[in-house]
Image 1: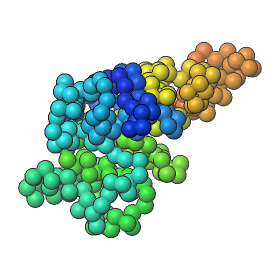
Image 2: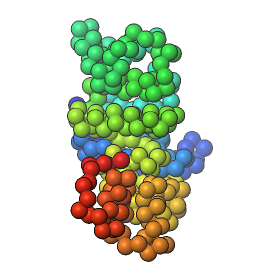
Image 3: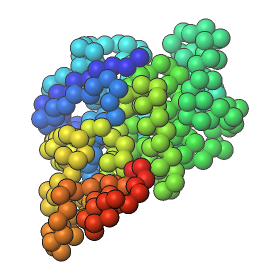
Image 4: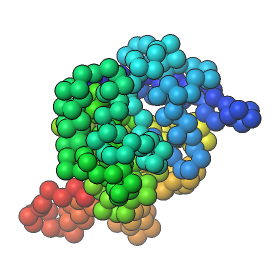
Length: 288
């Protein structure tokens, strides 16, 4: 079940009075793959907890299908939205993968045949169908993250909030995780809101991006609109994707006439081929 989110956090302070978030405004559309990009300490995790209803002491409102999450019973929230923590060991607790994934549907009062069907479908969706009987502690870090996602899918969540889903993974693991999330989004219609500081992954997968700096959203839009110049990102302790940084320097320091700033290797390859007069050469559909 997908959900519409409208986030308006006017102010939130930590218990010691330190300001954490202010003047946050953005919507999440049904079926969107949305990113919250920010350096460590920018407030990404806190913001996700507010959206999920775990933090309530703030001014403003978060609307879930038009209803303030602070006025909803936790079960009403969890039927639609679920949060995947950065460290999967903070979320997994059962002895086996299948038992952990089954906990949510059972807690929602579903019949055992329905629970079994949901567990099977969720494990298949995250490509863990052969590991249902495996001990949680014997999973790899990436498999644990997938198991956390499966637990939320089994409860019927149509919107996933993910806190640094690629943290702690090697480069191949990062890419496989992002491919999984993209497939859930594109093929299963799952709305995804992902907090991350990985600027190189963002252009490949996300529809819309919100840059968070010092607790405030400073820019929003599609990645190609948000990533414009390194100086602006440096001010919020971020950088351009590596390929965009290269083309930016070739354009502004070496005066090569690139018409636009490509964000992926595939886009940069096409721009370079056209620039050197080989536009008629065969092109592939590389996007990475």
